[in-house]
Length: 460
Image 1 (cartoon, one colour):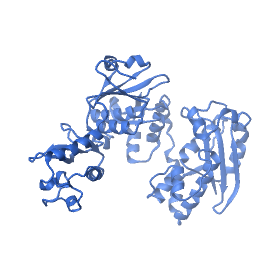
Image 2: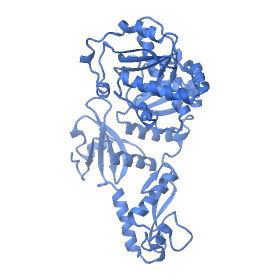
Image 3: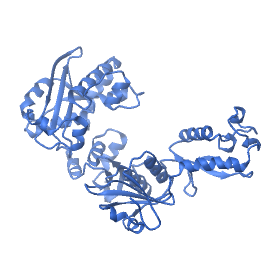
Image 4: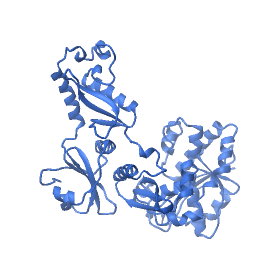
């Protein structure tokens, strides 16, 4: 017997959330035999971003039953059932928290449809409920409302049951699920952690930093390390003594700090982060005939690159796009062949630089146009975004097109001259990873303002 459920909450600090809506479908493996759905008065404030996401506000909940008024119904509906939810760890924790407030210990076995989908539908691009069910052709309505999400989870679970015809995977997941409950010894470690964006540092014996990470919710991410079953999580659980953190407000600054400090501190459990995030770079080098070539190589700190990429495939794809966009010669790139005439010349897509028919001056103007398109409109910028607290803002400083560091300010006049910007600046060494991250951040417009710098002042 299964109880498929979805819960909406107030949001807020870990284990301080309250339920605002709950929906449960009792399912015997053949059909729904009982169901329940209700708004719930959480007797606490709803976070503004949650109101925007769900459409549920405090006015709607004034006359709704409080949790203790529906607790008996929930117990009856889930009795002798395996709880099924999308991200079951969250829903199960919230239920246990609400019952604990009533002095009742609520224990059920449970199944997570995220984990099951990853095992049974590994080809899916996303395992978020909305994207997943739409890609599978499962209708979903009232997204981010309990009844709509619970019904979509039910239909997804039916599909997963069919996929797992021998029920071996589902049975194994039920058996192993609660091995990852938070050990009591870790409660003290996480109780002071914030739910805001920032960088966190896991410390082991002798205060050694064993792992550095970033998250939009530091407490939630650290909890995932302390309840996870992956080899890395188990090593963290064996070695962790305490956690420190720095709030950044802006997720992008958290990402910059994370990659910078992993490289600086070399924590033993940050295996991937010790290496470049963008290991492949494309740079310009003039050949003996005077033509500017686009060369793809492993990124080196001492070289300047017009762009860096996470892997060779992405970089090669970008090269081919530029060849097409600017009618460039393939033999003037790393993709050249051994023949005098390049492949694109055969297709009449190259003006003949490979055969000397297009002069170096004309060809190099195309490369110059490419670089102009890639460049920011101005070399010197202040880029502003979210701060760590209400009323505070963050900024990045770029000079000569190069990332110099970040800082925080409360009032516009605190960054209205270059000297004031520099006085608040937290410097950070630039590298190809930093440059690639900054470019991505700006090109995707994930900021508040781009403020060009004049020689003596900034213009807002």
